[in-house]
Every structure is written in C-alpha cells, then in structure tokens.
Image (cartoon, rainbow, N blue to C red; front, side, top):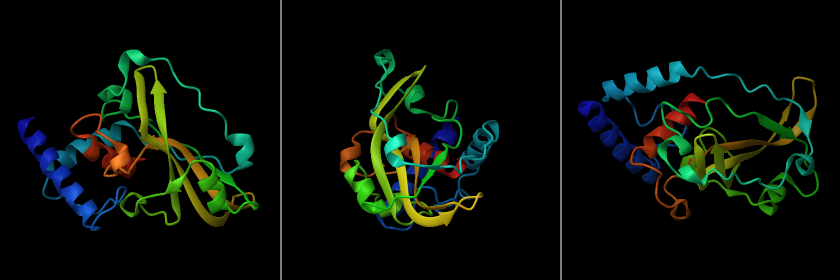
Length: 206
C-alpha cells in the first residue's frame, strides 16, 4: 500500500506538471503514461473492471429550454465534500457514463446559447478529445452526501452530427461529471489529496 501511495503521488505530480505544460489532457489515456507506475496501473485497471462502462444510449433530440431546469439542491449537509460524496475508486460519482443529450439549436447559435446559460469555454487541458468544449460548474448530490460546485460540471460540446434516426444536431450536453478543470483558480481546494489522479482515471474510464 505504501508503494502504491508513492506511485499515486508521483504520478499526480507528473500529471499536474504535464497539464500545465500542455503535454497532457484530462481524458487522454496516453499521457502521462502509467507504464512507470505498475502498481497504480493495476489498481486503476481493477477499479475500472469493477465498474464496467455502460454505453450512453440517448440519441434523442431535445430542446435545451425543455431540458434545462432549476437546480434542486440536496440537503445531505452531513457529508459535504467528503471523499465518498465527491467520488473515489470504490464509489465513483457517477459510476456510469452520463447520458449525452443532443440538440438542434438555431437562435441563438449553440456557442452563444451555452455562454448565455452559464457555460464558459473549457480550459484546453480539460477538453479531452472534444474541441469546441464548454463547462458549467455544478454540484453532485447523492445518498453519501453532497459535493459542492465547482467540483462537478455540465459538459457542453458544439459540433454537427446526425443521430441514428437521421436527425441533425449541432450541440450536445452531458450533465454532472467530475470537472476536469482541476488547475483553475475558481476550482478551489481539491476534496482530497488524490483527487487529480482520480479525475483523470474517471474520464479515462467513463
């Protein structure tokens, strides 16, 4: 366990350094490489195998105004920003790929709609493989407590595509995932020491 903890800390320091230098991105399964960290690599694989990644299944078009609703804050204040409330390898939050909702947005344009509804352009290191990506800070709440905003986000992406039924879309939103903008000043303190490595694992897994 001590060697695993040492590898986790060393990897996380390497991850933060590479993110700041533009050498890696959250959600990038290649960099930084886990090859030098065999215990951490095996630990990540076992955790991922425990929570098999279900496929996101929503290809239905929605109107943003119909989907967007006021946030209902949970009252589980007995456990705010704890490791289990925010998520860890034993209790990922969420423990499946959030459904991605697809929209055909015309007026205003998709980018302007996102900006007008609380999103901002995502930091480059946190975009994964999605260009034209936007982030809106949010919270996550469940039976194990509440993780305050901005540790989670709604993930908005602008881009044209066609659903399996042939419907056109130009914007999609995935709600409530761990925010990858872990280096931003507004993000504040991490919920716990290994949060950065966990967030990278979550995005690589889901």
